[in-house]
Length: 288
Figure 1: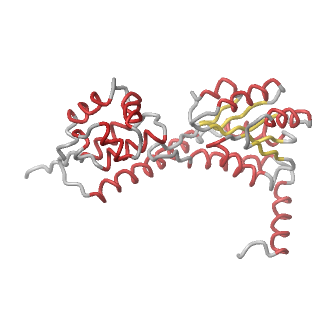
Figure 2 (figure 1 turned 180 degrees about the vertical axis):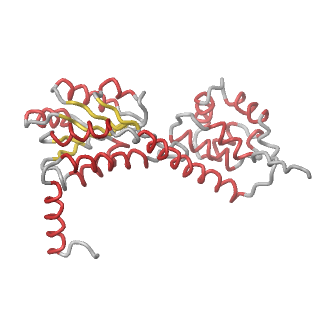
Figure 3 (figure 1 turned 30 degrees about the vertical axis):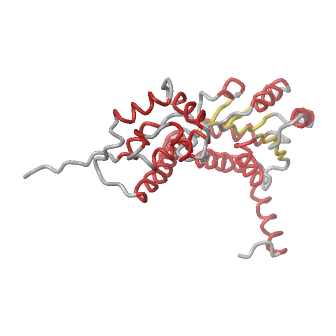
């Protein structure tokens, strides 16, 4: 009986593997996706042609190649030829290429969540963080630019159980004032969401928080993120980089896990939730 032979990866899959693991800017990701969509012809395209396909400038294509570790686009194109990207082992339709690209992003997010679940097997860091956050009155929640959505979502729900949440989701000269005001009002901790690409003013804000005596707890995409050196406790949750813009399912879930643990540490949390639900029902706030 003849053993079946697994087909070798198609050209788009080989390109996805080449680009995987590199921190690329949104523009560079557009270039990567353009090459994946045209994997069969990618090794024969000039940098100008790639730029036209991606809708970017020719120098951006050169910077993209350098970001991948090559001297320039000709070296990257040679690597594409060495990979046999222009000689598909299996037939791929345009739909196959798009499906591969999008599926890979979703599967990567699933893998991030699985690794987060593994980290949560040890509850001590979450419980410790929840106690520190629950005890802070007020509790400033910081997140700038890409991380502002995470901070805003956390603050929205945290305000239902914590008596004084202060959302800090905008930079500028007022940010330091608001951190200092929170510390003066009695805050003992600050929760920070930090996602790539890390704003310089976020680092400045965390330095101010430390100078004010606040304990800084940070949710970041990696334990080696730049914010680690300014954080008293860092909780890692990976972000997805497979699409033009990052995806942040794991940081969002980790934020909700923190909230769950905070509810266990906050006296009267259940009563506050019941009061909110009663008010919402009385006002007919929701359709259901």
